[in-house]
Amino acid sequence: MTKRILITGASSGFGQSIATHLSKQGHSVFGTSRDVADRVTSDSVHMLSMDVNNSSSIDMAIASMLKSSGGIDVLINNAGFGLCGALEDCSIDEARSQMETNFFGQIAVIQKVLPHMRAQGHGRIINIGSLAGDIGLPYQSMYSASKAAMQRITEALRLELKGTGIDLTIIAPGDFRTGFTASRVFAENALNSEQTSKMRSVVQQYERDEQSGSDPALVAQLVDKLINKKALRVLYRVGRADQRLAHRLKHWLPSAWFERVLATIYGI
Image 1 (tube, helix red, strand yellow):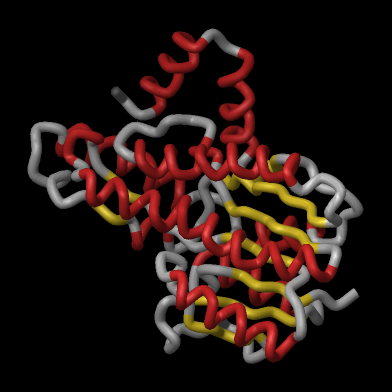
Image 2: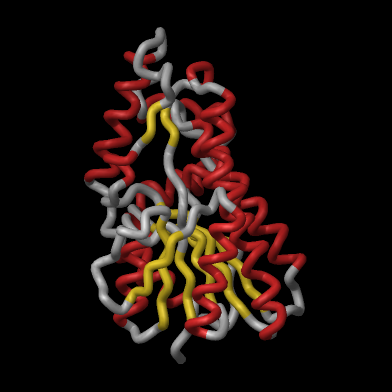
């Protein structure tokens, strides 16, 4: 069945891969980006201007989609970025910016979409999280915090939406070959502090993992399956087997043991 799908952050990375894949399956796909000049590699994806940190921008994008399609069957919440740096080198303004986009921005879109889904009696929301949402990553603490917050929101909102016909889940990818490496944002003080040398060493390991990561098409294929499933689980992990295993080990091992594992992996 053809679905009307809204994807935030669709100009690159997971969002672009998901939008292209779903449009090829015949769905009516609307992607969003802050820059109206951005385009995904598919003429069948309708690109809309949206800044998830701007309420009026969200309203206009949703209104444009509703005018064209008449409804929203699926929201894929993907917009976000990664802030890098030791916590003590991140200003409060930088920390707020991370949470504004990755957390409050996603919530804002959900709040705008839900009334339309309630009115039509059905809907599906897929939040794009991260395995980092369950593992506090050194020098990406704010990114981990933002993804953890979205996981808790997803769990809570599933219960609030029981009986409405609206289902909700969060996908937690590991490292993938997307534009995340190139678009990583460093805190202003991160590159000129006592922590810089150690941070650079850890980030180099992140980059190796990202560049040898999985194909983002795997996430697009998973989303394709989820929009058609009868019922959704709370969380879906996707990516390299060793990273998915590490996620499980956190819940199996004593916390001190797991911390040693991470310290060894990142040479801390």
